[in-house]
Length: 280
Length: 255
View (tube, each protein chain N blue to C red):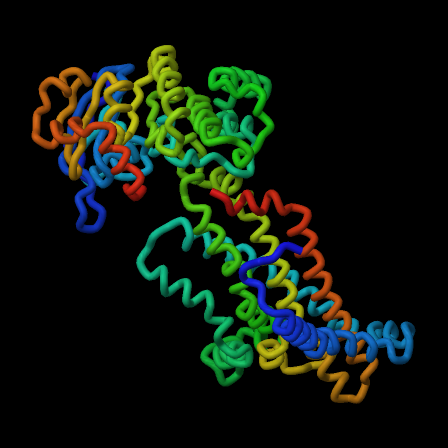
């Protein structure tokens, strides 16, 4: 091995390496393994049967359904917001950037509570919504809203630095070559951000399916109606149905693993293109 | 006169980038906007290209109100200092872009676009590189792709922002001669921005010397050399190349 000027003594290197490996095993790997071993404690059949149980099965479908609405909407809003921020100058831009980060800095429970205070029975729009027979809190719309709020920053945060880095010149070139605004966006802006957008969507999706706090507040925990997968895990666990709880939990964990694998695979497969998108 | 710029003014916040700028150029002229950084030359070029908007003043081109047209309708071939090639497209896709985004009614057929791209590739001597991506090209090659892309739309005017700014000295000299001969072949009204007085005097029919948002003097190179109108012009042109080499690397790129 070539020697490096920054090389520390063997003892230091060993200590640091062992410390970080121990940390990863203890705090990241062990819990993950526990989830899967607990789920399979009574064999494949039991775990599978627990997933097929009507309430669990409903929770899975509900989670997929909520993500299927929240993620595409957040992708669209995220692209729109980052486009506005990165490609235009306007008054109050710094404030908007801060606002986008809000869901990251506010506790998810508060995010959920906000919707209860606005749309709940005692909230601003509560009586009006009741009179018009519209249910938002303790129903699907509330869950979707809370999920969207919590996961909004993922796409925008991924795209803003990328788009700022790429600048406006390619768009200017497109316009000077006669392209319409739509053409410019579709043929120049969007292809340049597609990998960043994909990452953002993957992360957004993982969080949308896994969100607990905000959804917990707005859902009202009606089994088979408003319990998503993370909520179902808690319900089952509190009922001492450990196999069921961990079976659903391992499904969520699996989703996270798939997300990470997909991300790494894309990074490896399209390394050249991703590098080119950043280069100027 | 083909191009007539009349009392154009442009401010950024409180900074006057252009202050009452007027000049005219005959059809097919090769005009250099020469000046130090911050003199407003790039702003003027961007206004002509429709990428920046003048606060006051008029520009007419071939008896049309040029500023009333949006950038996309001007057919002003703009070559950016950093080229601004579409990084996710191959060279041929870059060149074809301006034709492919035309509305269906006036868009050439696919075969016609391919033929024109091929002609342009050979015009800029890049026949073999049509399938490459911009990141796989050298600076000089990128420069020529950018030029071919601008020429593809059959521009009514060619606007070049520091066309040789990002190239090394040897490539710069070669491209300079090539660009001059290309200009003579195409007969397009061409305006280019430079801070290199040698480049301006050698290439252009008309040189506009700019300083602090004003045109100090616009004249053919010989007249500029023999009769500088202001002390600034005399001083700016008087700089020898040995001084210049010391000054240029320190200049920040100004937008």
